[in-house]
Length: 144
Image (cartoon, rainbow, N blue to C red):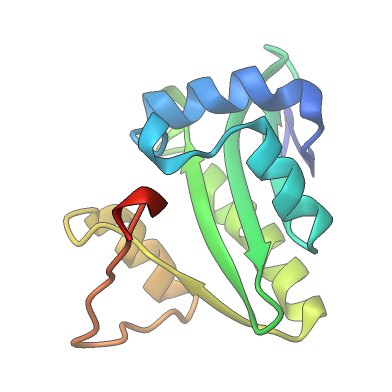
């Protein structure tokens, strides 16, 4: 992993992480993934790994794992476009799965059906489709 480091998220990373999420299409205001949400999730047993380019002193990727007491959810897993195609997603995923394996809990993720690169990566590491399940969400609690 020459020139790269995987470490835990710190609150000082937020602006750069949010920028990465926006650039990779993982971030938008509707998701409410702000600094406070991250902090709350980490306090409840979640973890966020940060992949940094040590030479350029910048964040190149993220892997956010949240915990609901039953399973770990892997999301906001992404690599900046300029770093893609270098095998970094495999390194970040392996470190994420190491944490998950050590926890002893199941892991679940969602990926857009058109993101074939990500789907192939996840399947290579043993993830399987839940078949006919649809993912449903209410983002605005005022709509309830």
